[in-house]
Length: 262
Image (cartoon, rainbow, N blue to C red; front, top):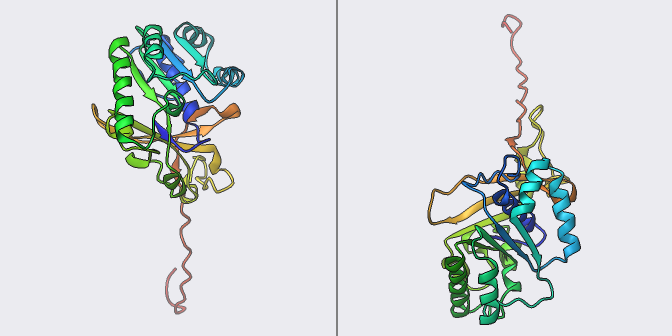
C-alpha cells in the first residue's frame, strides 16, 4: 500500500490488521469485512512503542469490549524501530519466518525499514519481493508492505495511480495488490459534503480531516470502489459517506407585459 507521508496509511493498516485479528463482531472499523479472523503480526519500523500504544488506545475507543479482547489475543504489534531488521539477511529471514508461522497477515510498516538494498534497482527490488513471497509461502500469511509515493506523485496529487510508488517499478509490478491512501484535494473539498442535512461543501479549512482509500491494482478480484474516511481524535480513521454538494438553483428575473400571467 502506498501513500505520501503523514496521510494515514499506518492508521489504515493498523485498523485493517485489527479487523482481521478480531474474531467477534465490532472490530472491523475500516469496513474491510474479512472472510475469517486470524493471527496478525505487525512490524512497525517508524514509530516507538509509546506511539503505538497511543494509537491502539485511540482506536480502542471506537471498539466494544469483546472486540478489544479478541484483538488482543490475535494481534502481535512489534516495534522494530532501531533494531535494524533486514529480511535480506538469511538469519533475520529465518527468525521472521518462524515467528510468523501460521499467521493470517504480516504487515511491514514501512518497507524501507526492513531491507538494505537499492530501492531504485529493479533487480534488487525483484529479489526483495521474491523474499517476501518466500515468507508468505512458508508462513501461510499474506504480506502487506507500506511504502511511500514519489515526491513527484505527491506533488502532482497522483498518489492514487498504480505507478505512484517511490523507487523501482518492480515494487508494484511484482506485487499482486496495491492500495493507496490519498488526501482530499481542494477541488474535491468544493464538490463533496459530509452534511446530509444541507449538503454544504467540506471546504478547504476542513479537507485535512478526510482521506480516500482505494485499490490501484487488484489481480485476483474485481476492483472495489474507493472509500472515504474521516480522521477522528488521535488520528483514527472512520468510514464516512460523502455526497455531492447541493447546487442552488439560479433565480431568473423575467420582465413582461402587464397582461402576462405569472
